[in-house]
Picture 1 (cartoon, helix red, strand yellow):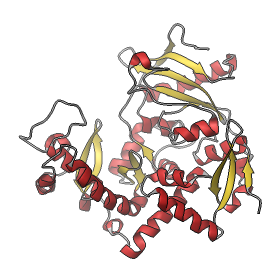
Picture 2 (cartoon, helix red, strand yellow):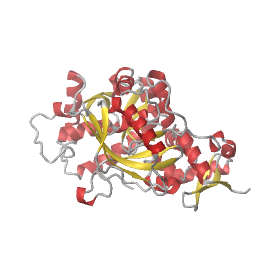
Picture 3 (tube, helix red, strand yellow):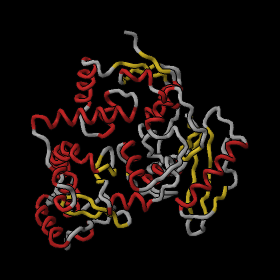
Picture 4 (cartoon, helix red, strand yellow):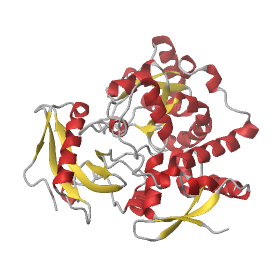
Length: 403
């Protein structure tokens, strides 16, 4: 059987369709509709940086422009339709998926105990019972509510006191659940008081790991369209590369997976796997909306920087940890998507004390002409962003267009 080959346009269209970026960002964006969108994506990464809007809010807004942050907060904290845990980073995840995090929690329990014991956090294990008893008696608590009398360093948010470390460990390993945030501080409660008991019972040991590997790989492939074993393993970040490779081999042997060649932006071919019916997928030839939209630096379509470079020719890195004098672009620069192409990157920030969204610089990508049409589309997108940014107008700095 000949290996199926997708050209670069087909590959982009399929990939963007799977990431809910092929259609215009219209429709309801609260309650069941918002939950359906999060299920389609798999999860939404949380991030505290708020130069224009927080990452999770911009991720959802770029797909549904009626979205407002209070809708996610309600879905998470009141409706309990989401839970918070880790994928590649902290994320909110549909509550239906909670049973598939048992393996992650088991592995975290083993890994983190050893890592954090050697991370100058001596004594955090001795705080487990005290922290659990305090939450049981007082209800949901933040890290500032526990560890009274413990030495607290001024070294920064990462320099945890023992009770804070105990909180994080008990959350990551399953005894505690994050039930919401005050500002961006997590509130923890006992899992038994938050999660339905039926969701907390792991499968039998003999089935647990294999079933989770299958769910992770199959779910990742559904949301990527095509993928390498490494990309499948990294999607939820629950399983190992060896486990993903073994899954691909088994599915291929059973005829449920086939090798496929993906044409990169540079014309080079890259080996992946896809389902056999991929050649008939309507997304391959679907005309994408020409709508220009600003994406979060943590958008799931671009989170894998190597894949973004391979598929879109978009070489991107976030420069928040790069000294200002050494930055190529800026502290927090947003990709700009138009149809199936990334056409620019923009450095902008909401100055809420001045009630303005200030565009400091925009760099069109190579071979992209920034004419009147794109400028008008960009200004229209800025106007739509204003409510999310919490300001009423946008302005351009002098010399903002970098061509």
